[in-house]
Length: 81
Image (cartoon, rainbow, N blue to C red; front, side, top):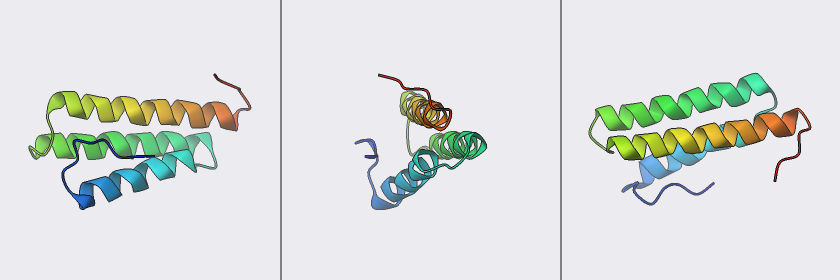
């Protein structure tokens, strides 16, 4: 998973990749949902600290949700296109 281009430092990029990897590699649905929550919490922290704007926070939340949905579908054996 590539980090969004609006991240302006390696720390945010690496942290985002680690969080997204926890979703993509989740062994259970609960782990995928927990990872999504961590991603949204991280995005909210970046927004509240002024590192990103609200539209970027929303973009990160959508990316995390999409990734979690894909992983949950995979774990349940649902094939999506």
